[in-house]
Image (cartoon, rainbow, N blue to C red; front, side, top):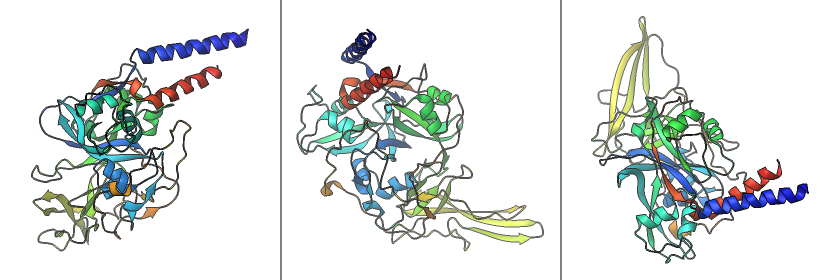
Length: 424
């Protein structure tokens, strides 16, 4: 009898799930209303759908391979770094520009060429790992077909709208950079908060959540403590922001800027990824960018620092500051770099990979090898942790995308529910 009751209960679960899906249960995305033409630096949380070269991942998002590695504190100066193969299932942070389009913040710079057997559903859920829904891609490209499983024409160019927020690059009045994170099966808001060393309250406030509940496929904005810049508006890298524990490349890959680990002060040095760079010496001194000159006196330590002031009209602007300190500063501590991983622990919910982009789809110039990068550490791959954030962050709003366009997440959720029920 107990077995019959269990089977009946399981059937009820199935009916409830299927009914709710058919009635249009929706995945939610945090959005930020906006006006004007300003933009900010943001991060997209992306899970690789296949083994891919660094350059292939970068090309998919219109990013620079070295910048992609730098945003993940992976060794961006190693010879052949752009050709390293990253494993399927690896989670990476992809740097992007978050613009204002159609009254909301989003990244609209990504263009994708459909391949044979591609559909809106496979592009949305497979290639872009749920960062965009089939409906959003359809609307962005004014496509008439309502069937997300209808084959696309090979070579068809698609605009891929991707979620991002700026919130003035701050959280609780502290510098921040925002990561767009696709909730996975098994995630809870407390788990996500602990992973990024923030609080449940902060995530709820940032994403305007009425309760600490997020469903697989929802896209949350996660605030990461960061270092911000004060470059003038005339600088092409005005508004540069770097997440704590990572790097960013600027000035045509001539300058690398890091954040942390000891503080949230932006620190920039020569990157030497390109053969020819403008002068990086501070005027009226022999101090180079990123260098500190000290001289001990009876009154303390005279310190001269050459810092970065932005990339203006092809010129690397430097700023020389001098001052007397009680003691001379020690060597600067850089965020540690790791080798790109070659393996990752796969969860059973991953789908079999789609075909990886062909060699012709890997684009972008490969930066020259660098020998001036900070020390590289080996071992297992772990993304840099971030400092603890507080509550009462900026509030966003949510938009929704139909769950019916996320078939693999529906199946995974159903399996998870059955497994949980079987353990009751």
